[in-house]
Image (tube, rainbow, N blue to C red; front, side, top):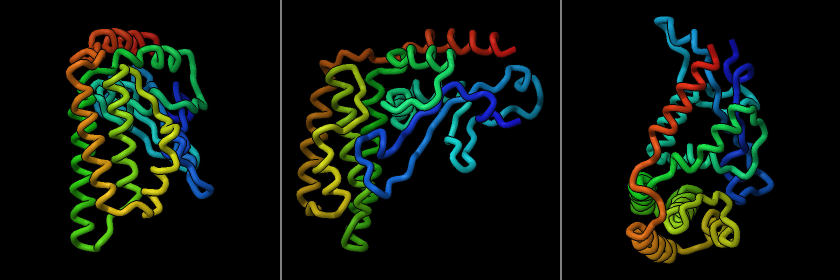
Length: 222
């Protein structure tokens, strides 16, 4: 059984093309969600929590795993729900997209900041070792900080970087000195931290609403 091909409910374009950072050489990164038929869970061998590829097929998560990750404010998962480029969306996919706000909470503060700190540490170690970081990763940590700040400030996640495209791509090309990048990062972290106390987001996601929907999906896929 090809779970992705036969049971996908959502497939989107992710990565640089969703962020508005695509160049002529950028890949078409695709991410998706599938619903494994409920009877498969009755067996000792459970269906996979995710499937990678092959070929042009997206990296896809089984819906329960996807929801669990989204409730922790995992940035990769939230970006799937908010991608501006939706390629496949079934009625169940439409229901999932309608739940987007239920997954959002101030958990984004810890999750996003943890990712950014880890990436910054790797970049600083690379500078100390090699004299230069992996600029693509540096670009994305700055992008994620800006996206997380906007989410905390407004309660809405905007994936496309908009007017920041040119300066972020300049970072990716290594045209921005490392010290200037660190200043940008420090200013972005400050804004991110200031956005938390007055954020319109709730402290916790609406887990009960998501769980009720997931149970209904299992019943309907019997």
